[in-house]
Length: 193
Image (cartoon, rainbow, N blue to C red; front, side, top):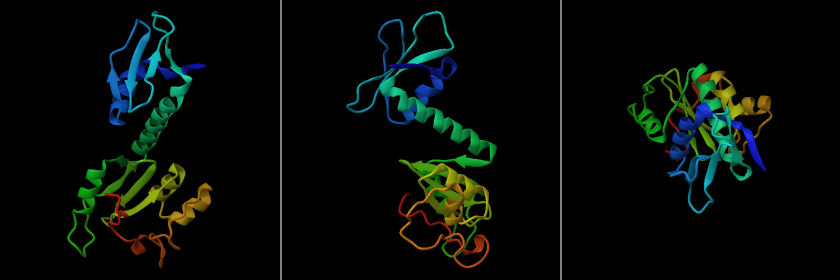
């Protein structure tokens, strides 16, 4: 079964660039109804097509490819939320630059701000709004959102969001002893960079 209302025609070029960033190879389309054909590894090709050549607003996605399109939509919604909340999406290399920007023993990392990047399905958050580069990893977007926009510890954010992640440690590094960011360890990226 195909989904005919999931992807809007105006998002095609953005969807192609997202696919390429995710490791897909864009291939030449076959026939007049195909709009996008892409392949990743040994997978069958992802095909996006139109039922007619009259320019309907939404295009058709095969059922087996629905998850890929939904991941694209989810990522774009996350990026829009981050932009609205002044949280910048960065690359792993940029995160390494931020965490390497301060001399050992000092907490003056640059640039100031709040950042995140994706490491597979893991979200790595860096709160450098005060120059301390407090870093945590998350499995759930809701927990990350609470942590990055408040002074909550990871445990508090997990409790409120209803999500749990076993860190293999008893306490959040954000609020070990104290009431604020002063107890967080700066620049720790858990061997992810």
